[in-house]
Every structure is written in structure tokens, then in C-alpha cells.
Length: 163
Length: 133
Figure 1 (cartoon, chains in turn purple, green):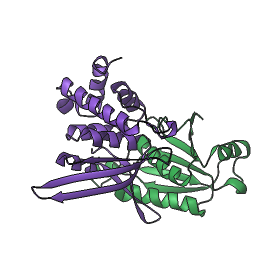
Figure 2 (cartoon, one colour):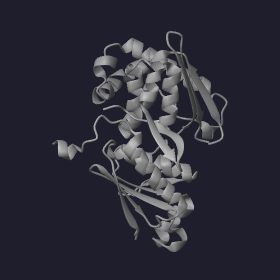
Figure 3 (cartoon, rainbow over the protein chains, first blue to last red):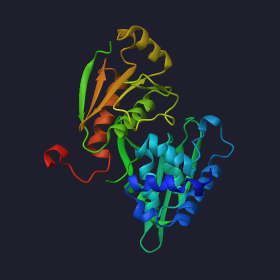
Figure 4 (cartoon, rainbow over the protein chains, first blue to last red):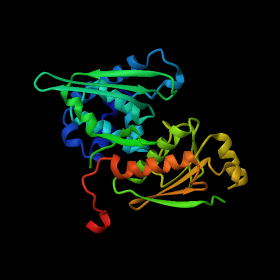
């Protein structure tokens, strides 16, 4: 199946997640953005061991995962609605599917700079990948972050949809 | 027999599947080879990524496959009391049935879950849905 053929299923997901008004009206833009996410995903994980891999976020996979675990997909779709960039959407997807946030760096200078960098530990717990963006809208990623502490030390567990 | 101590955590922010996903994440940081099992159907998931938490309300997390087999074979025994978390997601609460809540690993899991549910997840209200109704 192609992304276009799966679009009606994705529309159902958007409706269920309350995002159809913002994401459902522009199929070509949304599918192009999701294609860019998939490309970033593939480039980032290329050459890494099988145990480090995360399922490829095709439209069909997003729909399938939403049916199994809507809470994992909804934050990624909300970030898409917030106009976050493909690298940060790919990063969020990997975290939702089992990667861990290892490091986050954010720098802001009013009128000059908004730079977000995220380093992930992949599911093999031995491989690391990094994402960086200067797209200011990507700051919305932090709005969706689950904050935690383990043994008193800082952690970011995963991402949660706003309700 | 499972047995153990019930630890009830308030959960005003997460749906059942979301809360169990969090249990799995936190426990698997302690147990790198953690095994996840739907506590109602007995279905064992191959991995965190392939687990379907969305429709679950009860979850077993075992330290590893040996622990899962030991619990299945023997039930609660002192030798493996600290190798399993049984989580039940109910209405605005998450109940953990822990056989050895004083074990260091399990104390960490309980504390992290409690803090995450209280402070770590986005929410727009601190009111109970029940009291708001």
C-alpha cells in the first residue's frame, strides 16, 4: 500500500486524535512531511545493528501503532500539527517506540537563534543518534515531554499528548 | 499465586494503556531484559516496541524470561520475589502489586512511577474527573 492509499485510514486516526481540522485538510503537505520524517528515520538508522532499529514510520505503521497504542502516536501527530520539523518528529517516534532520551540541549537568543539538539540511546542500549534543528517551532517538542526522576536524577521518559 | 503488597498511586493524567506503558518503560530501565505480559490474557509480548498496551488494564513486567518462568512455575517464592511488577490501571489510580516492595530495584520503580504520575506528565487540571462530574 502507498501512503496515498492509506490516507483514509490516517484521516480516521486524525479524527480520533482530534487533529482532523488541522491535519486532515491538506493531504499532500501532510504526506510530504511524513515522507520527510521517514527519510530522516532511514538516514539516521542506516548501518546500525538490527537490535538498534525502530519500526519505519510509514503511514500504514503509524495507523497500525495508533490502533495498538494510541498514546504513543498522538504526541507525534500533535507535534506535526505544531509544525515541528521532520528530524524532531523522527526523534519523537523513536522515543515512543523504545529509544531513550540521553541528552537535550536548547539554546535561545531572542530574534537570533532557537536551536534544539537531542541525543537518543537506541533500543540495543549501545547505539546513539543525534538530531539537531534550528526550527523555532520545534521547541513545542519540550511541551510534550514526560519529565521524570530516577533515583533523584533527571530523566525524560517519553512524550505525552496534550488533552 | 501472586501475593504481595498493594501500592496505590494516584493517576489523574494518563489513560490505562498510557500508564502501563510508563510502568514498562520505567521497569525496563532497571531490567534490561524485561518481559511484558498481558496479565488478563497471558499474552507475552516480544518486545517493548511490539507490545500493545492500548487495550490493556493489567500488566506483568518480569525481570527477564527466567523470572517469568519461575513465577509461572512456582508463584511467589522468596527467591524471586523481587523480579516482578504487577500493575493494574484503574479509575484515576495505578495499583502496583509488589511481592518485595523493600527491594532496592522495586523501591526505585515505585518512586519513579509515583513522581512521574504526580509531576511528570502534561495535564490541564489537578482535579479528579470524579469530583468534577
